[in-house]
Image 1: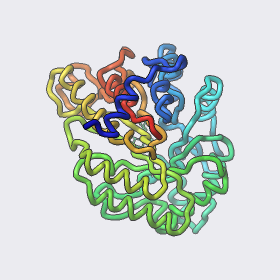
Image 2: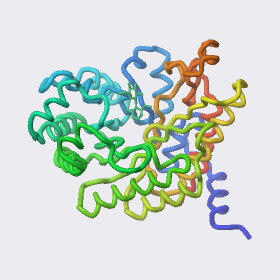
Image 3: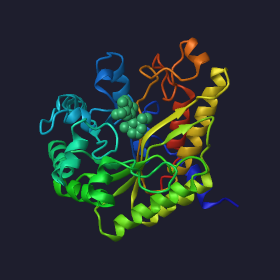
Length: 352
Ligand code: 9MR
């Protein structure tokens, strides 16, 4: 007997690509399946003449790698410096890409003046004023309003300057400020603990946090799964991920994969074997993520290995290797991870 699922998958495979669909372009395959493909980009990458053509061919959205972080945007109190972010924004606008934002409120990458200022007196404008300034300046399609507020082991909220200053209510405050500043931008809570490994406690903590926000009518639109996977670490548990994403969908929230990359640290010395494992893990993850209509976007954390950090593994470093987490290698050639993404994208059931 042919199942509904198999029939739909078959129909997808036989579908004639539209003229606009370029099968070597992830953005085009994604668009045909009703979601956006994008990538993190950085100002240093735009200076590399080889890179923008690749980014523009593959991605329809960008997210700043670091240029929207508070330490970059407000190095001195009250003096915003939008110059780096404007470069990315203008690049996106001039080339027809949308931009998503990351992050407005984070425990990390803050300027040194901020913590003492928060400690000096309770001043909500130190949180809301920044959110307002960013969201009024840029028309972002979505934004990570709060990033990584849960402890990685899922035992509670992560200690932070924000938690110290305002208590757990800082998360509500941030979302309210974001909605007030720009009612059109999709508001996202973004974290990394739900997608990989036996992390039941994190998933429970994530649902508890989201349920609290929703019960209090906090304006929240989506959950961001960062998607920092490891091909030789804690593998994606497809059943647990599927069940979890159903919980998110049941709550009426959208899902975005915001920072997909796959670390091959700990793998064998054979590069081809590493690449296969990375591709397999990518596919296992994306097959589940794209099997819910809640998923509206997939972004990789950068697109290539060209600018990546050297690995911690001394033997690899000695060989001049780098982290190899992206779908393109340092020569900007597509890796098996690219094919895994293209296949997972193309295999999405289109009946949404
Ligand atoms: O890749 C980013 C790096 O360039 C920055 O220096 C760093 C601090 O701003 O942040 C890195 O990006 C992180 C992201 O903002 C949140 N999730 C984890 C990312 C690191 O893999």
